[in-house]
Image (cartoon, rainbow, N blue to C red):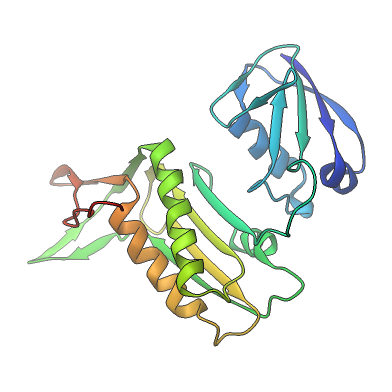
Length: 234
């Protein structure tokens, strides 16, 4: 399939052209196309946390399919307003690059970051060691992104000097030693709450973001369930 892509404002300046033509073997959705652009221009550290996409002159979202012959436009939010603090909220089957994530979070005033990354354990100590062959992650994706956004807002309410917040959750098949989740916070100084905020972020994600994992090993497989029951209003 063939599509025409138009770039405006920030993205036109960064990519250095106003339009491109692309050919793909099969249709893809908007989220997949944004990942394609990240992979095509890795040196630009493109920030898609606030990007707007239209397909055939209608606003489009990550799950929307792009069909053959479509005109796709890439642009930032329209008009002015206050400079938004960088926020990255993603569910992905792709490996995340910590350096690229931090590039997307850093502002001119940023002086420090705290990053938590979770991994798939090969051996879990319970009553006796349990060996894991792999984990399978799935999510209620639309709700998960909204709850990630809630966690980011809670962080900024509790630690107002925090600048950037990133929450990235891997989905799908993940082998031992593979990163599963990233929570990162940035600020002007290390003593402005980034350590506490990152710890709060991962704990809160585990409580209210609807993501589940299936643990697969030599002795079978089972879905790991938590114990926290959200309260009304969460």
